[in-house]
Image (cartoon, rainbow, N blue to C red; front, side):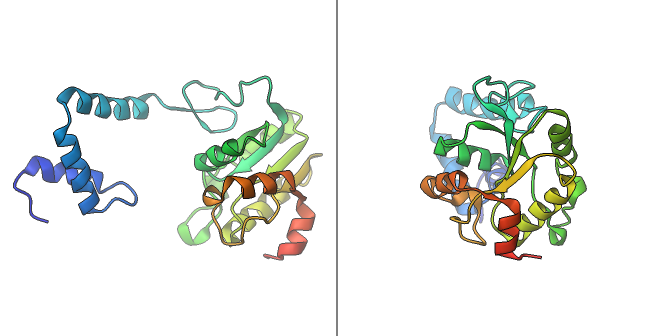
Length: 209
């Protein structure tokens, strides 16, 4: 792609770094911004920069937050003794959109995937074990995508929590094996949460190991 302006080329290159954005899409976005008022573009760029500078991660659950403790963990109406374990922040948003869960979350920051170089030490597993041991957690819901990597992570977590007096469940397999949690429709996800299974039943059905 040949550009008549180095400024345009640099902007296109930066936009094309975003996931799912190719050079043509990046050029379309850049040209759109070029047509907008300078003040509007400056507000756009400052909003993104301020988000990156000021965003925090909840000290309890590792969800994104404007404060040290996220609005979910700080909400006294939530059931703080029920923890839903998810892979990433997008999964928190997906489950919240169902309006069927009133507990709190624990964001692992990924799932165990040796092929990608992701092991337990790269995830927020130690803090989950500490929460269960120290905060009187009664139930841990494993809401991870039904993939080999997701099942491997569930199996590892169940071993780490084996000595803790906590009920461990997992979402029902209304979500197809191999699917991603964030792409499930809200009705399927809501039913999977409502019909969650004891972990032992899940492992016996799936036999992933």
